[in-house]
Amino acid sequence: MDNSTQIIQIIANIGIIAFVVAGMAALGLELTLKKVIEPLSDLFLLIKVVVANFLLVPALAYLIVVIIPVGEGFRIGLILLATAAGAPFLPKLVQVAKGKVAMSVGVMFLLMVLTVIYVPLALPLLLPGVAVNPLEIASSLIVLMLVPMAAGLLVNYRYKELAALLQNALSRISNYGLMLGFVALIALNWRYLMATFGSGAIISALLLIIGAFIIGWLSAGKDAKTKPVLALGTAQRNIAAALVVAGSNFSDPDVLLMCMVGALLMLVVLMITAGLLGKRNHGN
Image 1 (cartoon, rainbow, N blue to C red):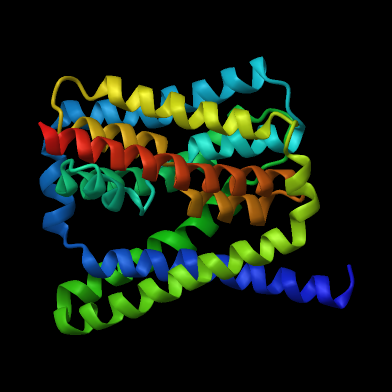
Image 2: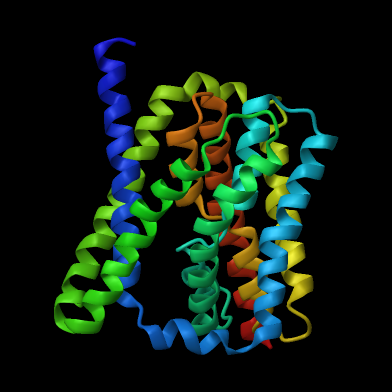
């Protein structure tokens, strides 16, 4: 690896870490325990959310990689995406879809916390024969996601005005980190990204997104305002967690590439879908 490549790799790592840490801290700074707990009083809803995200979506990913032959790295990346739930982007998607934003906050928080517990336990079972260190996965997720979010919650609880100031600054840092990290990763891996066309990676990721959306939609029942929360919340996987695990536990670049492909497709597909749902719900 030459010096320029090493520098770009360092920039990519800094960008992704800034995106994850600053984003989690910013999320904590705008949350309160009341916001988190109130929407989670419906036990039946919680069971449906957990089953959809941690049983049905990973099973769907497993089915997809059986039906569509993809390389080992892409297979690992897709299963990793399927196990990582609780995207910080969910409340914005639900707002665009004119669903229950307060409920989306509680669902998002629950899924993010459970992801930190679930991923280190599930990956070794879902990827037999692949060397995975559960303790390393758990420690990276706790340090980079839960600790910053908990710190943000504490600051917001004690110092409201400071929390408001920090939240805006950290949100910007997270957004800039994501852009910087993705640009650097694309610069490093653009040849590999081009190779994903025709590899089955793109269609696999699309099937996961669409299938997960349907799983969430059907699990929501008849409540029109709840459907966008569960459908979008199940389809939008936790890219931050997936990138952390992929970057620190797998040397195969295809694992990270699949996470990037999934992230880009989710951003486009789910924003368009949320907009369509918003028009539909507004008409109702």
